[in-house]
Length: 398
Image 1 (tube, rainbow, N blue to C red):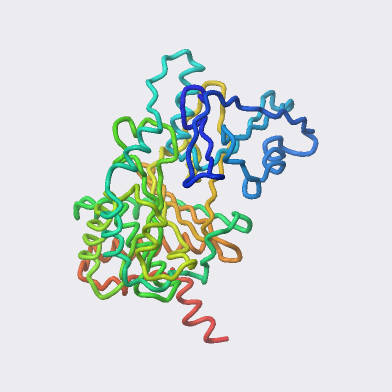
Image 2 (cartoon, helix red, strand yellow):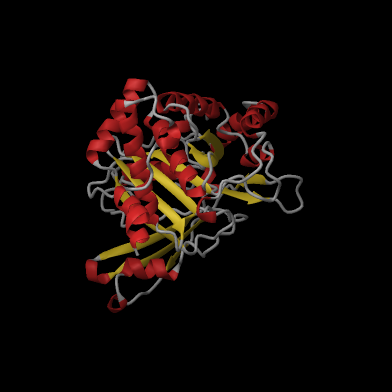
């Protein structure tokens, strides 16, 4: 795989240079470190994960490949366990899917598809929409934003992933069906509905009526020929601003959908450029939260943690972890039929609570769209009934 794809042989150099450069090595063999572990000490896979804590370990981006591999023999289960650490500079979730499929095809003796160099995407991103167009768009969206959106007071975007708690919930099946029905009826995407619901959640917990958060762009829509089959880090994070006011929910959905369509044209813009178009003074970040809406295949076990679902013959994916430097991230996994919610949040904030807020916001939004589309956006409920009762009744009676 490394020999086939240039991005897996890529390193980043910046020392003594005017700007950082990606340098593709002719050869970048992967060193696999064999570790001897004792099954009596516990599960071999768990021991490997503990040995190399992904949230604390750092890969040297000046060296290719930006991958570290450790292998241990699991004698008790008659197998080898391989742990791989990948840097996000060279892979995204789609890349991992493609690698799994190609490994499976190779092991099955099937022909592999042609490769698409990552450099093609780099050229498209740099030579596509001009810097001036990017600046005009983001200045129009963010020019008068002078305060960061910091729900729960979380604003440190330079974290290392330590202390991040994770919770996963499936969206109730009936709600998932109704969500898709409302999207079709309004001729908008379910992603637009989810972005609006997340904005309502942030407005509630941050005490604001005007919120900005990061949305993860797929990056392959404007990536040129073969972008859907190329390896590399295509995703990009860009700001999205949504006002939570008296506008009816029906009109709000259409406005968010239109804004996201405009944002798509700028999906390769630099986040640094976008942030400089706001009135938030550096080095304060513009936002401290992310929404990652992604399309995934549903694994057989119903998990929604973002694990790669494709497995090669003789291989089994035991687990996967993804981390960002943001203190609050919500991933919405579109599984084709249902939806999964995964919240990652800095402790001691309850990640499960964040998922419950999103569930409630989506339920409230769908109900309003079904029954009263003119309902003001700021009236959508976020607190689940039991928490609302606790706040308004139980605690006041103590």
